[in-house]
Image 1 (spheres, each protein chain N blue to C red):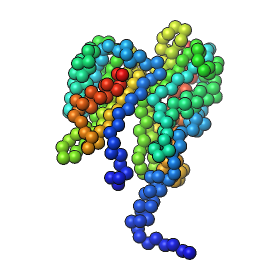
Image 2: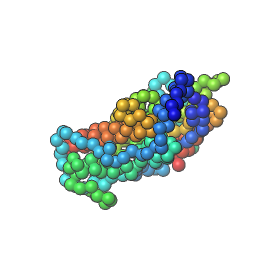
Image 3: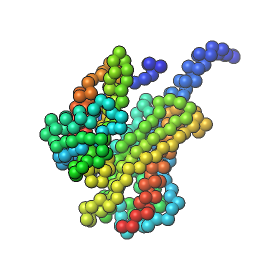
Image 4: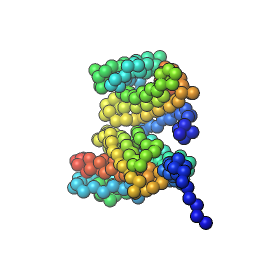
Length: 128
Length: 179
């Protein structure tokens, strides 16, 4: 069965038709329910490091208007130690809430990276 | 010549292989994704153009996927069939309907394949430049081994069913709009 399971790392993304990703300046990262790895803070921190205005929180909506809202799903596995196997990120239009872009990084055990590195590669992909 | 296989593990492995492989994958077909709506519609006075992204092409050795072109064709045919807009234009229409295939969750094995799909739709009035409707629509469809024994075929049927249901829900919402 191990031979049948995919063992390659992958990074993929897609954008909605007409989505203007380059024009986004401010973001709010909505914390995923049950996230005990503080991935929302990693995403907001990385965005701030890239020069964007970013905040995060437990509320699904920000207190003040932003250009885009980010949602995510992190999936973890055990192999000697816990590691993040998959990170899905969705970018929603700040006004309508519609999904305008998504990106996904998949890293099985042998190609594992730190959560910080996976956040970095997914944001690099979705914002390019 | 009669060949008998009495080895149960071998039989099980062959059965599993048939479930998993069962031939080359083919992409979802537009005809099979065309939706029909039964609710009465408010016909929009104006033509519409359609753009789709987020879909994937199918590789022969990979899983069956839904391509942008196939989904756009199904959406176009469904709109024409329902008579929602005066016509569907290639470009430069009064309205622009975009569909972003955000997620397609597919199983890797099993007797019944359930595909879950999420598509974000937006309808823009190109005259005013405003977005008049947006909706994230989730749908799913299960294809059973009775419908198709080969896994690749079963996955295609599940994809097509999820897409058809998604388009049906989108058209039902669009049909209730008064623009």
